[in-house]
Image (cartoon, rainbow, N blue to C red):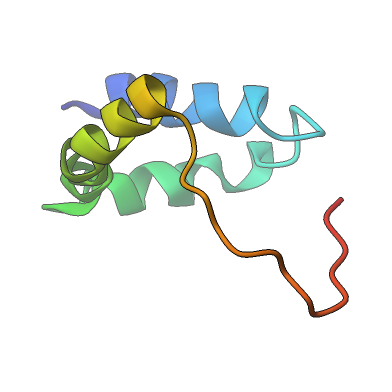
Length: 76
């Protein structure tokens, strides 16, 4: 992957998934530099490959029946 392609790929997620689409503009070069290092981008792709079967199971069978959380918890 070249620098331009990496910047487009990483930039997409940083701009569209962040509350402020410009929050990472100043640091974009550092993000790209990091993901261009051998293996760094591949690690993210490997996660999706590894989780694929569990994701399909969730889609096909719904969420697992988990015990209630009894500790006071806040989810925002």
